[in-house]
Amino acid sequence: MKKTRLGLCPIGKFVFSHEDALRQKTALQAKLREWQVEFVDLEYVLPDGLVRDQAHVAPVVEHFRKQAIDALFMPHCNFGTEGAVGMIGRKLGVPTLVWGPRDEAPLPDGTRLRDTLCGMFASTKVLKKLGVPFTYIENCRLDEPALRSGVDMFLRAANAANALRRGMRIGLIGQRIDFFWSTISNESELLERFNVEVLPVDMVTFIENARQRVAGCLLEAAQLMKQLDVANYPDHEPLARVLAVRDQMLAHVADNGLDAVAIQDFTSLVDAMGTYCFFADSLVANTVPLAIESDVHGAISTALLHRAAFATTPVFLAEYTVRHPQDDNGVLLWHAGAPTEMCKPGAKVKLGPHWILPSPLAGMPHFPLRDGDITVARFDGDTGKYRLAVGEGASMPGPHTQNNYVWMKVDNWPRWERILMEGEFIHHTAMTYGHYGAALVEACKYIPGLEPVRLNED
Image 1 (spheres, helix red, strand yellow):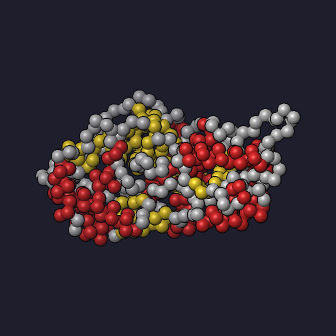
Image 2: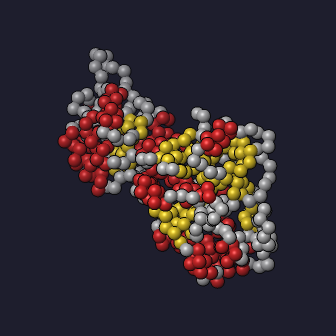
Image 3: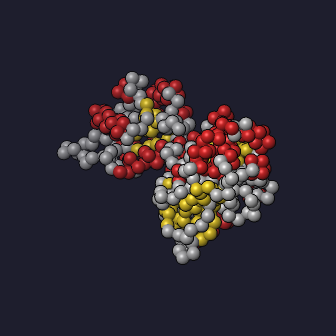
């Protein structure tokens, strides 16, 4: 995944110190480079690379459009040319960030080099007047943590929001499972309102193509059998069929430019391949957001969370399953097909029978997930109302169970449970390691029609 390209649009004013504004601009550019933020600025586009007049709007907009920026940062370097700020933000129509350096004390003679705070009050008023959504970082000094964390959060929010603003493609392999009414989705509404294109794939065609790949997977399967703890497979050939399903999914993603996949998983695929294929999901999900059980909304959830994490960590479509037996704020995140990269260090990936379905077939993955901070997210909607439920917690000790799981402790599970139960949501939720809740909530600001729901009290 490419980095979010930031358009750096420093704002000055014909009043106050032009020299100090240049110092602030240069210092910020150095910080962004230090933080390895990809940005394009206005050097050689405007005199001194600063917007200081409403006449600068046209060349700035033209430049940033040519540079195909993903987000806009308008740091106020001495005051603010408010009309230009509003028009640039409105014309570019990308996620927009506003910040300015905290002003120093007045000089000994009582004059001031800049009134940054005052200028931002004027600019943000104009942005609101023109209907431009924006993110604001508190007025702080360049070296204070609020700036770095704020820029990072904004870039993650923009990266997630742009997935829907610019269009997302979900590959739906197989139809919705008949008795899973909770995963019914409105494909037309997703396209019209959120630019989500659902690309259906006939399961018969998918299976035929996967079968053609089996012979090419036999050697890898034989080698993998030595690394895994495999039960109820007579030889390595069933595992080759699982790997063939993996390869067919990855080929489908590459051939169609998919952002995520939703796959039926059972029972057609299981019956046709003669094995459970959830381990294929585990391998695909290491790099591609994936949802099982034909859950299109779940696939969107995994894609949004994946982008908020800058694709640095895989995402798992887990289920809120049971409450912790001793801790009222603990809950089991469980499902099958978790990314193998989430496997707990020291644990071995096991393939065996399904733990609850009475089937002679094997191939179900069983391994606990690693410890760490956790973010969960669920995009869901009914009757025209769509919301994104976002929460943060951390792993906690808990009893052993089967398939893929981690126990998560949150601040107030009864609150979470009631919000989820009474809302548009189901038991499926995207989860990943790290805390990205603030970025996902902020992303909703840039996605018309999507309301954020905070599961945490604070």
